[in-house]
Amino acid sequence: MDWLAKMLQLPQQFLFSSGGKGGGCIQASADDATFVAIISARAKVIKQFKDKTKGQVLDKLIAYTSEEAHSSVEKAAKLALVEIRCLKTDDKFALRGTTLASAVREDRKKGLIPFFVCATVGTTSTCAIDNISEIGPICKEEDLWLHIDAVYAGCACICPEYRPWINGVEYSTTFSINPHKWLHINPPCSAFWVKDQELITEPLSVDAMYLRVRSANTGVTVPDFRNWHVQLTRPFGALKMWFVFRMFGVHGLQERIRKDMAMAKEFEALVLADPRFEIVADVVSGLVCFRLKGDNAQNEKLLSMIDKSRRICITPSISRGIFYLRFCISVYTTESRDVAFAWEVIQHEADALLSS
Ligand SMILES: *Cc1c(COP(=O)(O)O)cnc(C)c1O
Image (cartoon, rainbow, N blue to C red; front, side, top):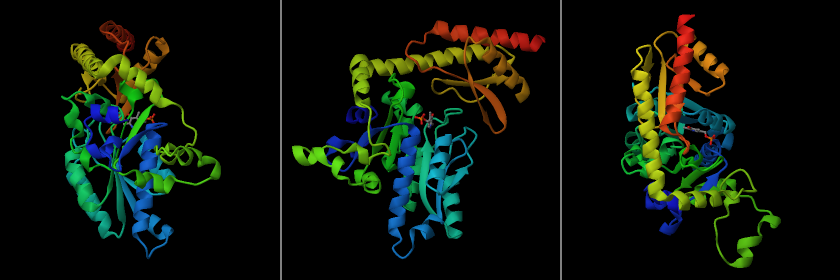
């Protein structure tokens, strides 16, 4: 986890080797990472209200994320029994500081207790990047737990030229990326860091005699990862990360990300060269969002024809009522010829649709 944190140039506080309280572990998934973050944040804020019952605080808690955040954030809030507000984004689908600040102000006036923000670096729909440098200072000022879900695009931050996407990460309490999304490690592999381990381990720890064995007997203190997540038994996820890091090297992984980005640009150029199609969001990563210039129904029809062809598989999304298709390059065996092949299939189906 320290290796990966160093690749990402995370602040020292997130590293075990800093000698401080921080560290990282592999969570079962990004859904788990966000869930652990929100329940830990909930425990922290409940403790601050000594004159109120847990229920009284719980009733007033309010979390924030953007309308473009992944479904896992809403799910985490649902499981944690707290309200969440999905805030409006700007014209690039990103959450801005001023939007968060006014929501917090409004809610405090209503007597609610703001406690948690989940910002996204690389939303699932369009790879929008929330403005962490704006959001971070507000979280600090308002004493809100900032969790950064950078699970897809965060992988690219191992390249110095993309590292600015997570500028402001020093304001976050927890941070996560999914090496299984874009660092060639087979799923599941979700990396999660916390600045202060106790924030997580205190609410998640239970003590049972049969679990107590190792550290007590060996005298070696190692992080007891069972207290960092919901599951007890853990797969040996570190081993597959170790192999991939040793095999590709940091440089190899960086080159692969750059190559994927270049191929996304190739695909974008193909789309732009066909006047029947349009690009829906800026292409900043391996993801290209595109659609036929036309109504949603036509695009839904195109998607179902592509599916029925059984040659490629495309996942759609919808933003502000606009339905579109998503083409994403993230597997290390993908080459330009695969991109060209996919575009041929898409064009072929579009020809059939538009001539029918
Ligand atoms: C994929 C994705 C997730 C969910 O990841 P899992 O590991 O499958 O839970 C969450 N957030 C974002 C932004 C994602 O792209």
